[in-house]
Length: 249
Image 1 (cartoon, rainbow, N blue to C red):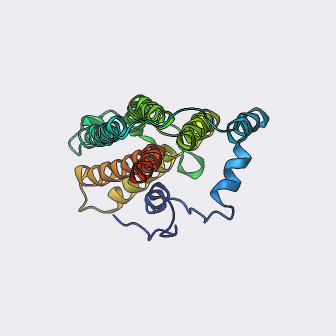
Image 2: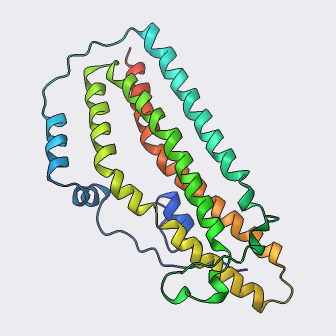
Image 3: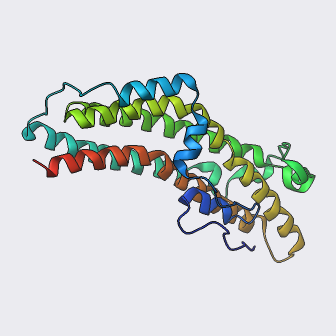
């Protein structure tokens, strides 16, 4: 089973590099900066909310004493590590992603995009798609409250960090729909990869179903882990800002 070398730049986000490496689509380099693309995703009401946060004057929160902020920072780092480990463990232990999973016998068909609509590529993928969406729901359920807790810590740390927390809250709400839309695309690429491996298995008499399903399971786990890293980046950024504040004291 072959994979093409990834056309994505080394500086591309890990999720983009992983998807490009599946050899089922070309991921073109973005011609716009991240800020430029993000501006196109915001509507008028989002812009008003952002303007209000950025130009609302100095925050009045007083800085928390070091004795209170340092333990909070340490506890949040532990929470981040715990959430990451739990979600990564859920992905690695997902029964559907096991090479010995009975998915291959389900014979459940779905419609694949474009030229991938074929009997060879359509069977059995629905169970994997359902598993992918289930892992996404787990990520949302675990990461959203963690992000809110980190924002609460920033809001009590300093006026500048209170503004950063408010900005993050606005951006999380404003970009939620766009994020959901974009992160619904990886399963489409995985559907193509599934069909590709299934065709190759039929062409290679030495290959066994367990072998190609095992390779696909690894591909899907890699995509999910890359998505997990992407979803945790805002939390990591907020914690980094909080840690920088602590070094000033």
